[in-house]
Amino acid sequence: MHSKALNIGFVVYPGFTGLDLVGPHEVLVRANTRCYLIGKTTAPIRSDRGLQIIPDVSFDTCPALDVLVVPGGPGQTPGMEDNELISFLAQRSAQAQWVAGVCTGVLLLAQAGILKGKSATTHWLAMAELRCLDAHPVEERIVRDGRIITGAGVSAGIDMALTLVAIVFGEEEAQRIQLAMEYDPQPPYDVGTPVKAPSHIVEKLRKTSRFNRN
Image (tube, rainbow, N blue to C red; front, side, top):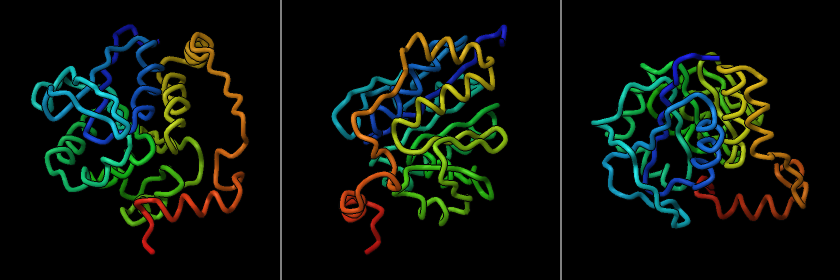
């Protein structure tokens, strides 16, 4: 285990998805870390469902980071055109030991040029977008390519964070955290991927997705 606490930064922007942020944060804050919520400023930021987060630091005051984590959410779409956000991701990703993305936050990393030629995953509805950004999409829940770790849609952020803890701090520490959280998923329906879900539900989501090109 690292004797020195790692600095972990979670980038927050308007329209992020709550669990994309809170899931990985809940895991990583339990390890030997210092966790920072990072916004463009320290003004409150709302998620796509109204969860309000107050950043600890701004882009300008953010300390050096060992790990950078980027959540996804509908706000990712306008975020792709936010030069200040994309520049921050590019700069801090180059400096960090580890870079992690959850759901469509992975697209923001790709927009920043971090995933060019790299294997990565994202939400199943956004796989085509990831390919258009010169990454290599892999339909897995967690994908590691060197120092970059990506998780699929929303809830996969918890698994991604546990995977990162196991790599950095050891499997026993990851197991300790998982048990402390009583993370033992037993969903009421086995429809968590498009392969398992009824086809009419899959198509309904495709049609209403912001990534639908039809």
